[in-house]
Length: 466
Image 1 (tube, rainbow, N blue to C red):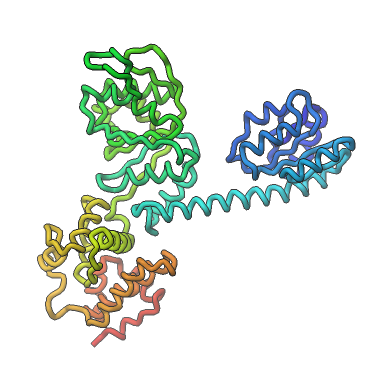
Image 2 (cartoon, helix red, strand yellow):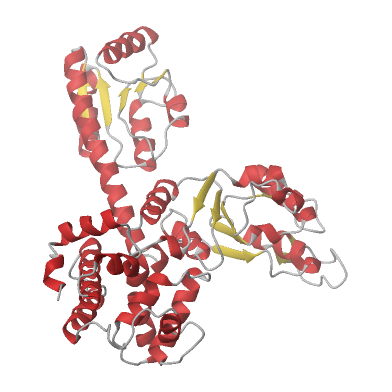
């Protein structure tokens, strides 16, 4: 970003830098430059020191208020060198005294760009670390989960409306909370509204608020939930359940970022991030019967799809181990040992209730309470293992060690997944005596994938043939 009030100098400098391959955004005033600048700016600001109105030092101070790590290079006359040196002490990246060569300026810009890219990359890595420590549904290495985390990192601080789409129990509320906690709004309210749980008789008052006397029984002034979220995040869960008349009013709020409580003509301006969640495909033609198309497109700036648990492969066992550990601490009981039946059930079950169902299963597992999804019953019905097909105690011990390692914070997540996968393959080979067809059937993977995994883990199938 080049800032100089002298049009001739600005044009010449821009031309020089463009020939070097730079993308130059030129401005004739500091005020104009500030309008185009935000904390996501990934380049360098080059500004003249002496300009009418807001000068270069004032611009530098304003840029530091936006982001202290944006590199600023000051262009000075000989009489302003002392001022520029002081600016360097205050955090300016560099200064060049007139006259200067285009090559000297370009070298300084290149170094500043490298610094800026390093700063932004570190921020992205720190943000990724935040996601890794968030709620349990964000843990995992399934491709869809990795894409989800990456997109969340990119939009956490962007003031865009977000639509979260996922099946019941997939963790839509968890993703909404994580977006809020990773944003600059984390210290402000996170206001969650279940649109399907509020009676139509009170939902308008709950959302927009009301003044005294707005309707019969309105004896006290009430701040609506939307206004209460001002400065923070408004989470509209089950947005597809909102009555059509209220969808019109919500659309107006989203477009204007203003709300008018019942019983008053006062318009109140809002600063909020709106996150909505749905289990329905609001973009389908069937959705037009219950959801406004214009509201859908207004919410659908960014859509986050949460994959169902059945699509998350090896993440299921890892999540289950985490939930078992949490349940054991909650109930103050020792975590039970895993056996092959449980592990096979985790992989074969389709988990229609998604993560919520897995959490409840882990709790029953810790409490020792049989239920409809008790693994032994389900697997016996499907004739997975009979009494002659149980893996050896040594193989079961290996699986238990692998599962225990999922809770081991001393090794990385990919290493935990690799260790677990290796032990499950070994145990299955042992129980089938190395029979390839039976092994891949039980593992539920293609033959080529099976042999690729054998090679990656250094497993010799012949060691299990008897």
